[in-house]
Image: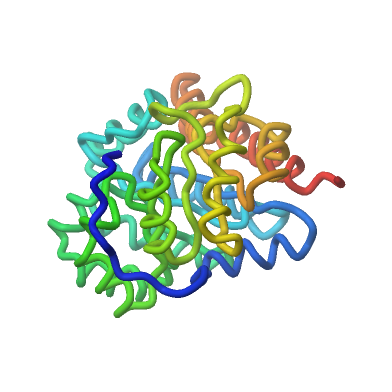
Length: 288
C-alpha cells in the first residue's frame, strides 16, 4: 500500500451499515462475531450451496454470524494455496459471476446475512451499477474488495451508496496512518484487518501484529467495527482474536475440509466442514 492517498468521500463517525450492526448486536451479547468464507462453485455450484448452508448452522445449530461468499478469480493475488486451489477448480468447472447471486439468495434465505468477496475486475466487467443492483436484489449486504483501494473506488462508492450496500476495504500492518484514516473513513459496515503480511492460509498461531493494527484502527475511529482475518484455523484462535477485535474471519480452514473430502473420494461429504464450524462457533461463544 502506498503513502500517496487521494481524498475520498467520508462520513462523520463510523457508518455501521447492515453488517456493522450485526457485529454490534453480537458484541452486545458479550462475544465476538464469526465470519466464514467459502467459494461459490466448489466443488460445484450445487455442492457449494450445500456447504454455505453448513456455515449458517443449517437451522439446527448456531452458525457463523456473517457469511463471506467468494467469487473465484483467475488472478487472486491475496489468496493462499488452499483458497487458490478451490477457486481454480471452481473456474475449471464453469462457475459464473451470476452464480454468486444464487449463493447470496441461498444464504440469506436461512436468515444469515451475506457479503461477497471478489476482485474488482469481475465487478467492472459485469458493470458496477448492475452488480450492486443485482447483489442488493439478491439480499446481499455488501462487498469486500481486496484489490480496490478507496482512492480508486469512486464508482464503487457511488453505486454502493445508491443501492445501500456495505463496502469493506482492507488494511494491513504496513498501512500508513494516512492510509488507515482514509480507508476507515471510506468503509461502511466494518474494516477488514489483515493480520499478517502475505497471502491467506491457516496458521499454527495468530499474528502478534493483529492487536496493534486493531489499536491503530480504533485510534482513527473508536466506534468502527473491525474484523481480523488471515491465519485463523480453530476455535481457540478465533476466541483469541475476538478478545481484541469485533470479528474473526475464517476461510482457509473451512476450504481445506472441502479439498480433503474431494481427495478422499467423496466431495459431497461435509462432515469435516461441520466439525470445523462447530469448533469455531464454540470458540467465539465460550464464556469469558
